[in-house]
Each structure stands twice: as C-alpha cells, then as structure tokens.
Image (cartoon, rainbow, N blue to C red; front, side, top):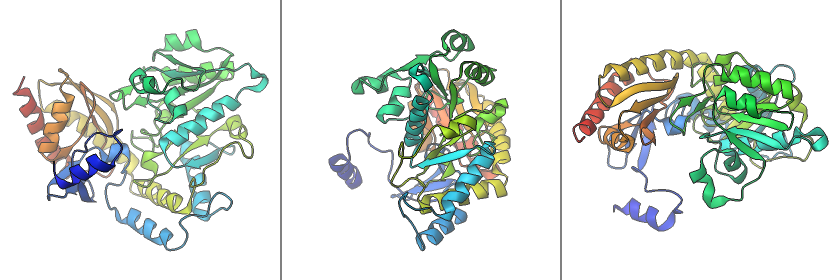
Length: 396
C-alpha cells in the first residue's frame, strides 16, 4: 500500500472501504489525484457538487461569510438563514404556510421528517409509517428504520418501530394506506437502488390517498433536489404538492447542509423545543447554499440539467455497447443498466480511463455529474466511457 493508504488503514474507522484515490484539487467537472492524474467527475460527490469544483461563486461565498460570522448557534438568527428559508419555500412552491428546518445532512433531514410524521398523530391512532422497499433515507437509526434495504439494517436492529416497507406499486399503496398511517415516505427516484423511478402515476396516487386518509406525504429530495432532474425538485414533474420534503446534498454544492421544507398544516406540527441542531442553519452553510442556488437559478442550470441529461442518455445508448441495455432516470441523475453484473468492473475501468462514475449495484452504473457540464465534457465522457465498456466487454 502507498503511504496514504497505510495511514488510512491505521486511523480511519473500518466502516469505510479503501478509497479509490487521494484527491488533491478540483476545477469545474475535473479533479486531480496526488499523482497528478486528471479525472472527469461524473459523480459530483454523489450528486452534491452542483456547480462542480472550486466554482468562483462557491469560493467567494465561503470566503466572504467566513470573514464575518461562521457560527452563532440557534439562539440567534442571521440574514443568510432567513434568506435561504425564503428561497427554499419559493423554489419548492410551499406558499404562505411554507416553513423550513435546517440541519447538516440528508440523514438529519430525514430524521426531522420522521419526527414530523410522529407528530401527525392527534388522538394517538396514527401508529404506522410507510416507506418503500429498496429506498435509502440515511444511516442514522431513524433514517435507517425508513430505509428499505435489509442488508443495511440487520446489524443495527432493533430499529425504531412502526415502519412498514411496501413494494413500489400503486396497488400496494392502495391496499396498505389507511387512517392509521401517519406518513408515507418516498424517493421520487431511488438513487442507491440503481436510479429507479417510481411507476407512472405513483406520486399522483400517493398524494390522493394520503389526502384521503390524513397521512403526510413526505418526499425525500436529498439526491434529486436542487435542479438535478430538470426541475428544482423531482416531485414537480408530477405536478403535486407534498406535505414535506427532505433536502441536502446539491443545495450546498459541497458544503454540508440539510433540512426539511414543510407545506400547509405540516408547518404547524413542530412546537418549541421538539427538535433542534447546534450547527443547523449556521450562517456559513446558509450563505453558501444561497450562493449555490442563486447561481443555479441565474445560469439556467435547471434547464441545462434537463437538456444535458437527455443528451447524455442518447450518447450512452449511441455507443452501441452490448453491455448497455438501457438508461434510467431524469436529468443529470442517470443509471446505465448493464446486461451482466459487472458494474464494479465498469466503474474501475472508467476510473482507469480518467472518468469517475459509480456502481450503484451489480448491474447499474450511476452518473450524477455537475449541473454545469456542456459539450466538451460530454465529448470526453463518450471517449472514456466507451473505452471502459469495451475493456470490460472484452473479458466476458
């Protein structure tokens, strides 16, 4: 092992595998490792780096805010936090009753949403929370209880109770949603499951059924938000209004931040002292998120995600590789379906050819590049991904 790998092996908790490389800098959609190798980054920190690396807007926001106030605790308020709350309510279409709670990650956002679900229980009759098989909502105990992946859950059981995992079908929803349900949690696209979209009409049916039975519809937009799918939030493709959304990842563009946005009566469920976060909504994080979201809006990057995502889908299919059987997803969150369970080999081959993608499961390559990509990056992607696919196909 190299020196840094030995240091990692000695000091970093074994919950992580050995990293693929030691990165030292980035610019735009590119990063460089400690050996000087350059990579085209089509993962963006797992749908986090919305503006790519070292974007001037991001750098300026960090520098400017760090020179004034970085942290004040939630005993005080700052202008960046107020501005970000107003911005998120506007972008989400939450209206006059919209409210925001700030944390530091997607898992914290889903923990806050889980507690919100528990509060939707007037009279104590709503004891059930529904989530979906194969969904991923985080690794803390509450968010893991919502996660429909048994292999992630098993070592940590018993988890917080009352959560039931349903197949992602409208029929299962109709059969299981009743007046005892406090909330339904959904990912509009299951990123960790291989970029799997919900069935056509699912969100519309979920909205109608949750309305009918008084349950909250909570949409996990941690991976799909901040314009990644070609709308500000993926639920907007369906034209529905949820009761709450969880946000994180791309809204901070690389700076840790998360939270929930609530709609309608869900905005009144929390009362003083029922939830909090020492660092949540700190001025540094919220100033950066304002700058990132402002640049996405100013530069038309939501539309760019829609246009470039369609082009990227066409380019993958146009490579004509016998390994590729299809492309799933929306905008710049795409999953390449493979004919054989060789996703890790393809991901490794891509890295060897200077391209960062991810094996979401044995037969799916996940791509979530920065929202800033253009023709040059797509051309380079074609060359590098084609070489990776060809090298793996030659071994089969």
